[in-house]
Amino acid sequence: MRRREFLAGSLAAGAGLLSAGRLAAAEPPLANAPVPGDAKMPFQQPPLPFAMTALAPYLSEEQLTYHYGKHHAAYFKNLNALVEGKPEANQSLRDVVVASSGPVFNNAAQAWNHSFYWDCMKPGAGGEPAGDFESFRKAMSEAAVKLFGSGWAWLAADSQGKLEIMPLSNADTPLKHGREPVLTIDVWEHAYYVDYRNERAKFVEGFWGVANWPFAAKCYAAAKR
Ligand code: FE
Image (cartoon, rainbow, N blue to C red):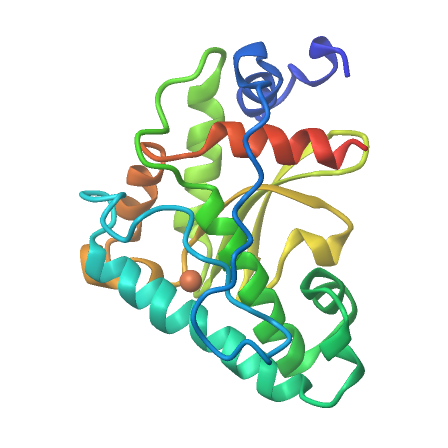
């Protein structure tokens, strides 16, 4: 993709950033080791890609312990119960998300969305990338802060590499809209209630200090295949 093609519009910064050569180095694939739990269950919560204490002071160990260990884990537990003995139990989590509806979708999507979200953060990441990052950051933050109720602010790409900020409610995900997720911020209150109480804007602002741009660049590259 030519840089000029997507250096237009409010997403210029994000796109320019994702095309930057210094972000092109491939990240090692995530460790796929199963986490402690029932190994017989078809869907296993992946391990957190960082220590529970690693994102402090942005997110405390207590916040992550609840979010990963209680909320995220519950979606896997619920999903496994819902699909027991059903065809979905033999599908990939992503395929279940794309094809399902109702409670199976809600739990499958939340299981997938959170696994993606953890990879969107990295200790010591963030920073001030080159380009018109400020307008992208503002637009994404605004989408996250203004989303009514529970949901996710997504940066997503279509197969042509066109980027879009998508605020989506509840468990909804770009995968359901034919888009490839590139970056996300969880704005369910359970994502920030320990550290930020009701102050979603402060939680969203802090995200930019840990945003994992190499991961986003990898997702963006994959979207265009
Ligand atoms: Fe969450």
